[in-house]
Length: 279
Image (cartoon, rainbow, N blue to C red; front, side, top):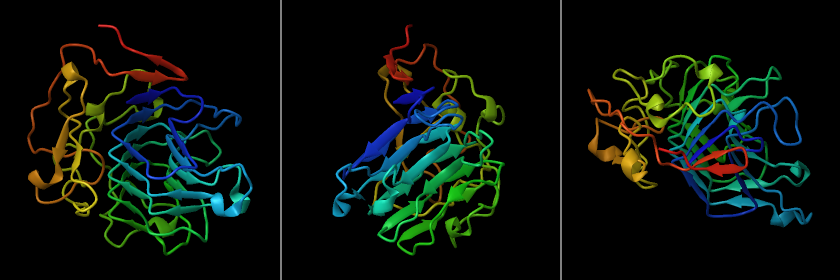
């Protein structure tokens, strides 16, 4: 799925369990978010707004968020309490793995982040690993001081502003060396595609991730897109290189870039309208 120029959120998951959010391209979520002016909406928002004021009903459990490409969103991945933070909703067994997040949209209010987690004493067994965050602002994470959320093996372009987001196995801070090297701050809606997120030879994200074979084995190959069948190219981390990549792309050394001769047939979502590109 491709989502851009949305005035709400790219993807919103609320008061539910056992969701998988994967293999989406989400970018340029706009300058104003629904009822909040002058703030870019989130790319992926996982929350719990039960609405019935029963404390024990506030729960967000057993979600997997992986293989997503996000650029120019406000809080690119937001795990939050929505309008009901007084009920201290919890994230239980929520895994955020192998997402590529580029230049969160800065509206001048210091609200943009690659990954943002609202504080809660009830968080339990949640993991944030193998994610790539490329921003030059330094405002890359909101990480509650909670031992039940594990941050590790994430690549930050510069040191994250929140020390609780640092992992002991994070690689050294460095730009990720993506195929698209500039212009991320001023993306024109409708122009970005998967190959822009392809890892280039020598990227510090290559072979530096944690082996997550027990969680999942397949991930995107951003450099080779099968436009004709409208399918994502999926590869196995086990068959390429010496280890898992950080981010959403599997890197193939010295791979020849595939250039599609036709326009993509993927359905795109712009704002609240669903459109299909014409040939």
